[in-house]
Image 1 (cartoon, rainbow, N blue to C red):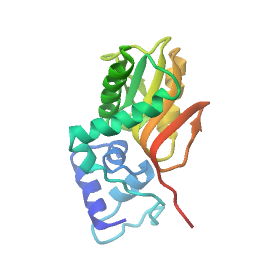
Image 2 (cartoon, rainbow, N blue to C red):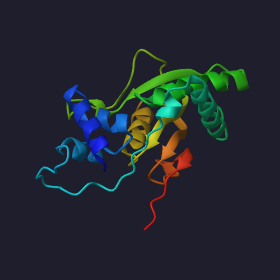
Image 3 (cartoon, one colour):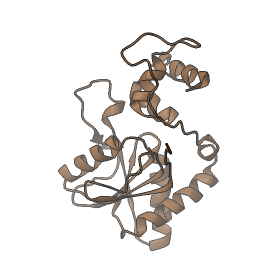
Image 4 (cartoon, rainbow, N blue to C red):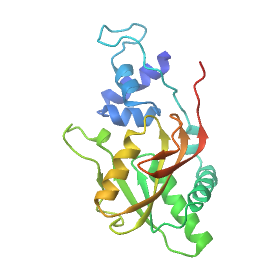
Length: 205
């Protein structure tokens, strides 16, 4: 891990970001985010796990800064989702999955002529209360009895995707597919739901 990542993690922590939010901002696992925030710039702090977790830091800032590029990538993700049939609702995982989900719903509307609703999922890792559960936002579409596609930017461990699948099923939704920009875990299916990724990262050795 380089000093720039450590510095960015500590800046985010000083601004009140939770460990889960730092993980999302840096596109690393929650364990890696925790490790980064425990380091001092240039010197490692003594803790129970002084070794950095094995992880890949992903920076897709050149994509996120352009609405045109985001739309092209979202169209590709929509195309992957449509291979599993049409959905009533696109569920974006906050924060980074929401822009992709929004554009995907628009692309699918244009291609199929069927109006596709948008829902937002708030994962456990963004909650400060450790006993809190992930939840579907009440400000967006209901998922009850609907076929849904789940959208996120990066899969690191698969825990968040499994969490949203479980919450959706508990609410009577039928997840038909998961689409992500980058898969760092090599997951093709979770909870009997197919997982599609534009980019799959593999660690060799």
